Amino acid sequence: NIKKTCWNISILSILLLLLLLLLLLLLLLLLLLLLLLLLLLLLRTTTTSSSSSSSSSSSTTAQVSVAGCSHKCCVSSYRLAPENLFPKGLDDCVKTIKYFMKHAASFGADAQRIAVAGDSSGGNLAAAVALRLRNEKMKPKLKMQILIYPVLQAFDFNTPSYQEHACDPYLDRSWMIAFWMWYGYGNMPTSMLPILMSSEHSTAAAKATYGKYVDRSVLAADIQARYDPSNVVVNGNATIWKHLQPIVTNEYFSPLLAKTDVLRDEGTMYIARLRAAGVKVEHAHYQALHALVDNLSIPFASNAVNVMVDYLKANM
Image 1 (cartoon, helix red, strand yellow):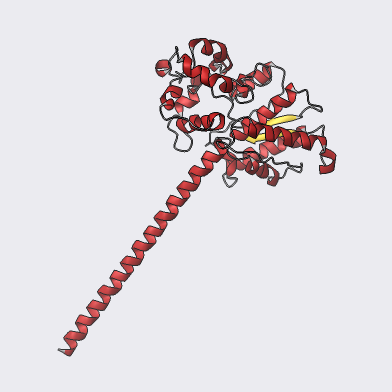
Image 2: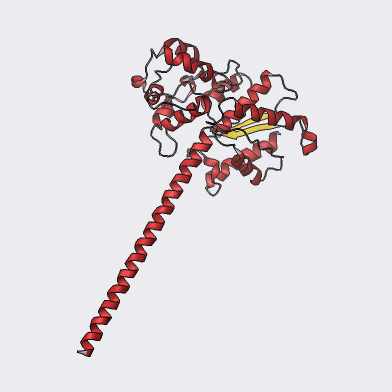
């Protein structure tokens, strides 16, 4: 009986131990799940910030600096959207660059050799800063601008790339539309999303006027072939356009729509216009995700940054 009792106790102890191990395993899995959710939330927040003019491009500037560029780097803080609407963030960037150019010598920099740079929404700000300084006839002129996957227009959300990557898991079309609306207007009713996706927000007359700046004909033939006009509304809502038009067509909000040849076309369109205006352009295209330069551990990301650094060294 004593042996039987001891045996039963041993079995019970083993079962309790197994139960304890199972509970620990469940707790560990729960902890891993919480960490995964936190990581996803962090990634979503980062995407939101970097793409909606809600944070600076300081990380990109730092990446270029760390990669070996010996130039001085000035990173501008600016008021963030949606709490601060366009053009407040841009005004802050313009104020910063003007101050830096005026006091370049005190920073150990050459006022004749200053460039502006940015990625994503920062590319929008860099292009808008260059346009503002050009229109204000700021002297000395900027030496160059470096735009990395820049966001340049909020007029047409049916370009081939918008259609092709409409449901991209990292940065889809609906998020981009929301970012634009937060930057320019502070909020957007959900009912507006399908209207903007179908281009119903702009009238036929507006499409005739501004559509030529978002020129698909300069794209490669295989990319043009991917364009699907079936879901595009030609005769849009005049009331909605009247509300959106003052900001959407502002050349500092959408540099792609600038009336000058220097700043007109998004991506490849932008490059084509720059070259037509006699501007020297160096173009490097990578088949990669948005926010490419945020992770230099990826070989082609570090290569992309090195290309920028080499261009700066050779041309500044």
